[in-house]
Amino acid sequence: MKQSLVTLTIGQSPRSDILPLLQDHLPEEQVAHAGLLDGLTLAEVEQFFSPEAGEKVLVSRMTTGEQVRLSGPKVEQGLQRKITALEQQGYDTILLLCTGEFGTLKTEKALLLEPDRIIPPLVKAIVQEHKVGIVVPVEEQIAEQASKWRNLNSAPCFAVASPYLAQQNDLIEAGLSLQEQGADVVVLDCIGYHQKHRDFLQKMLGIPVLLSNVLVAKLAAELIV
Image 1 (cartoon, rainbow, N blue to C red):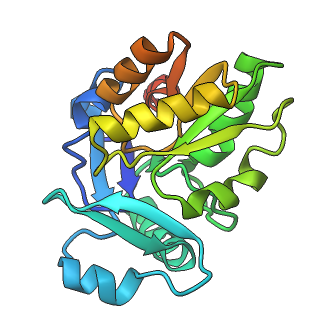
Image 2 (cartoon, rainbow, N blue to C red):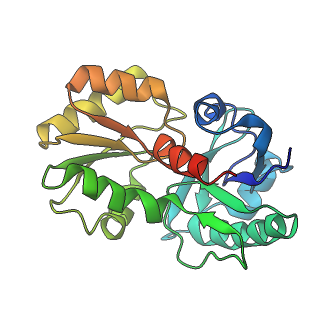
């Protein structure tokens, strides 16, 4: 059976941490996986992709489990090279496994699913006038989120808890912070967040908690033929 869809992480593939969650919605035999950092050592990642002062910061994961901080501009350039190569290999749909904002990514014919273009308008339609609390992996990303969520009817609030490093206390602090800020709905805005993070916060706060990766996986499943 032809593999028509490929997932593309800004880290290394396969994403064993979220693969079971994705496979709940995507047929395993029709999906391939690729990563921007595939084949690189941690030292090479730090050499080629570490953010400079003032650059947008993205966060991902090595297959060995380490969290890596990456330069947004360098990642965007690398992703375009990967996307071009994947399209040349014949994939019809490319699902980007990153919720960061990218302004220049493009394909010739393949369908490119970018979570940052899908999730904010979808969340807006769901929550309407309710206040959204957004959890991000690192502090620097809070300032960068203003543009991404600018169309919400009510200004969002933010908290920090890494999906790769966070302990239970970090999730508790993030949840309490969002509660104090009046959040009615929580969005875990990184592909690395897992069902266990959603379940914990939903039980703790008693409000809906949305997983970005599940939202885009369900949409991608509808495009597989």
